[in-house]
Image (tube, rainbow, N blue to C red; front, side, top):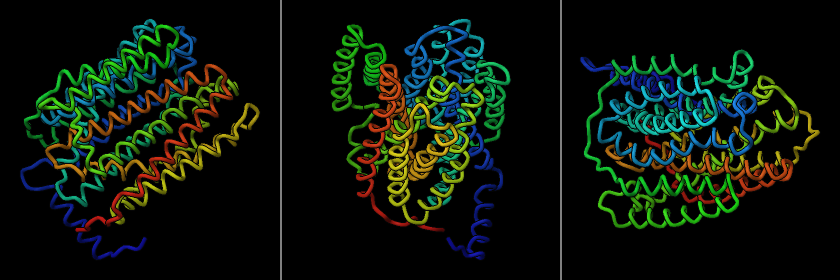
Length: 463
């Protein structure tokens, strides 16, 4: 892509005036704080995967216990994010962000000190609750700090790149920390990062408080429905059947409340906008593919191939090495051509990667498996920044927290359910379950990739 040096120089001058107005804190501080927080909560969604066998050896628990270590965080993260987006708008993004970061840091310490599996799972729930506050507040903080659409697109791309890189590097970090010290290190490493975020927030711009009523009935029914559905998938049997019935009833009540309530936690009318609907569906499909495949292949490398935590983490390095770079490229493509091109190309690259992984077996050399994971990661990395920017551009600034909550709740719910379903499939027979999981993820991305063609292909306006 060619650039105009004179135009670039003008942009840098404009950026300097916008980022450092006299008497006001720099938006760069808000972006840095937001990026660190998003990185932190995304890291904890994936760093635990490689450490699961070590956690099982230390604290006990079979496959269902390991699934709950992951999903206790993901479920709380996803379900409460529906309301925490509105809470971020109501309290002010900077205040909500500081509160969420403080609680997340303390919960991380509790995870690292957990004496048994139940206490670890409980601390993971608290982590997830705090992460649900941090994520939409961090994006709203960035959204409000950059009123200009073009500069905001670059800031959101940087924010998304940090989170995506954290998710991708999680397995490597988990393997290194678990091998060098212990699985508890994956939680203790959060403490200095949390402290740094709180220090940055002391200098970041303060956010305005906006009226945003909370929908308690909608939030409660959403939590019940999602928890029961995940329980049904993981536990199965008679108990699972009862949980499924509870999930269906709670889900029906949720949609009724949202359709008739005066202040719904998920305004169903939001999905009448084509861009919003496609962005949410695509984000969910990408999360199923990425989070669930990382979970399955973390078990594959250690339980099927017999690799240790460090070797298993390093096996993910080829798929993570370019992901942050691709995120930046995706943001630039979205800024120049609109979100449709990178979203469509990214999803079909990911589909091709999933189909390639269908050939992996118990005797496939680990280096070849590591390389075969690359197309999936690159496709997902190409898709996420454009869909996030498209979602933010489709809603007014005063609803940024709500939109961020809806989008990321959908992504986390999909990722958590994907782990629950895929974990159950591989528990019944690893090779067959792994291939079925890959096929399901490929079909989901193919469907959302087709729908992404319906997005407008307009170029973004350059300053």
